[in-house]
Image (cartoon, rainbow, N blue to C red; front, side, top):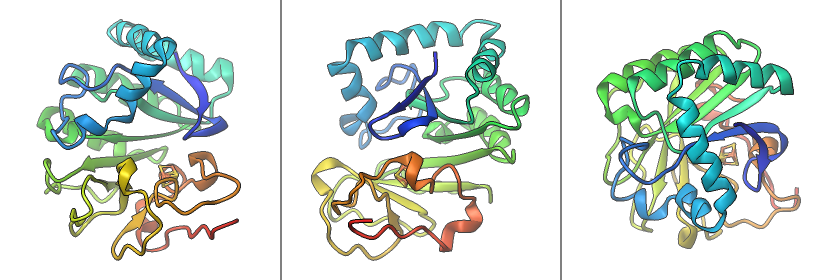
Length: 232
Ligand code: SF4
């Protein structure tokens, strides 16, 4: 169901929950800019075991007892941090409400996610309720096709997927992700670039567990982003 760590997340602190990706069925807010660069779709392609787990999770997510089972899993494994959707997204209002219930009943667990489902007004309403919880860190994902979201609650931050070198993140962007071919160590005016994707070699390697920007910090940290020096 949930699994601890991975190459990007780090060791065993952050547990991920994933669904199949890359179609409107499970990513209703997907865009033509994000689709060809989807990391989760690539994982499903070269890791059949992960793809099978995501499919099983989708079936579980439709069950009435999904929230109860997730909470039991969190307790049984002593999970402290959850990255919701290492693949997939909030695909319906009903499904999003299940995660809202999980978060409400797991106040000691930190949840965080990036989502393009803010593009679906009915799902956005539920996402914004999650974002208001003290144990949740919510990110709207955006790109050149979605454009900048126009209604961003104060607890929500915006992550911009940069797909071209000419693609300038708009005002209001808090964090920039770069597609693989743009991950070069060159000065980038504007918002912070994810240190795992800025092309700067570092040892030890940057992981979300070590960095913490997306899940530890709050929107108040918009102007005090962590600086990770090369070689640190
Ligand atoms: S900014 Fe930090 S926490 Fe966020 S995705 Fe990049 S490495 Fe992970």
